[in-house]
Image 1 (cartoon, rainbow, N blue to C red):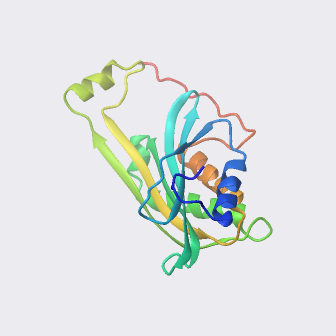
Image 2 (cartoon, rainbow, N blue to C red):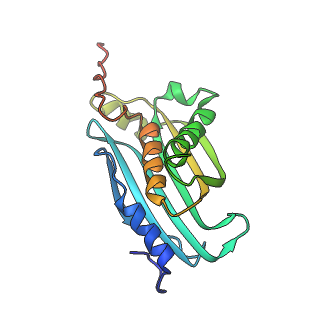
Length: 203
């Protein structure tokens, strides 16, 4: 249930129920988490963990905000806010086109699940995509070397922060779009397709 202390309006309760009812991939684990209390009178948040081959490869959070009075910047009374992050291979993090690719994952997912014939659409989308390349030193570098197989002293991450306003009550479509974004960020194959195992280098 929503984390606010006030009795939520029916439109917000139905929106939360729609998010909770949306089916998800087996690799994506969802749980209700604490929602921010200062951004809107009513808020609900969901956390996600994505596994690939049994290992955590991405995490995310989706927050539903509702202000019955409306919000000029939102162009509506509902707002969805997301944060998704995933660890990447260092060579991908150096790609200057990666931010555009990451943003396209979100837009393509929203268009596919909430576009004409599927949902009511969205508006006022905004956000950032950040790529980070870090090099470990000292004890952190030694810990990477001790991993089995040995890890790289260089770590790369992709972070997507975005928000948009759903048009209409079909928020289950928006949850499906968000899960598609998580899958793309985590590098999961399309549903029903089994990824080939990664061959370890001999050395």
